Image 1: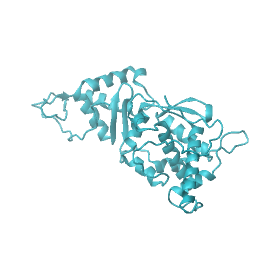
Image 2: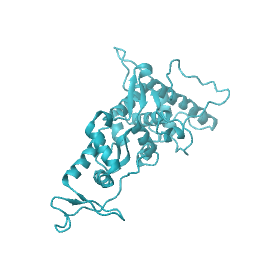
Image 3: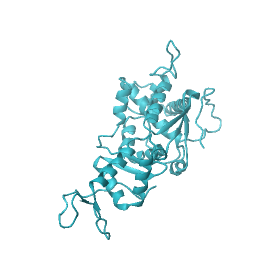
Image 4: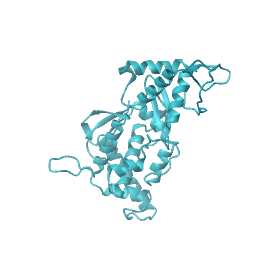
Length: 309
């Protein structure tokens, strides 16, 4: 991780003509260091770096200007503070600045760049019941991409998922939740609009896995259609890279997604997902557990469960 993080900075003011050269601004000072003059050109470069960071698919290795600004950020503390201030002013949090991830930023809760789970679900479907399923799909992708805490902590780790694998995992989870509810004597057939985890898994389990149109395309409202839409959204956002068409679509994680999932664990984004009522609050333990002895649950053939490097 970079040593540089977004910080709160005092408001800029017009420089005193006797202390700073014309057309220069004062960088927020660091205790023990002399204040360095920063020109409008420096501010423009800092804003340009943040703009690069807002293009998640752009890699520093493919853009010389981006790579140079990253080098400057890492080697020039005054420029780094300036770029952090620009990001903070835009409601962005700097997650990491490195050659592998570029300038990885996440939108704060009040940022105009924030994409809320509820907004995403409303755009994805007009059916309120489906919003449970879209939230569940995103959580399942994150859980399968980084099934163990050590995977999430390892900068070199690359997770791989498939659309069919995510769907199979969720359906297996639904089976176990149903069995647990039956053992506890709970209602296993709640109304589809009932709050809570049971409503979510029941809606998912009832939904067709694929469905079909006349030309054999996957129905958008099927569970694999919903998972596919979630994966495509993450790919468009630079969090996943599509690597093939097998098993409904295969994807690998990017450094940005790893950083985002790390950040999501303690942010309001996870709270929004939890508010959908589709998962219990995690205690931080591994997301995937081996089946108990004698478990006769079977996944569909060629389900394409994710594998990991």
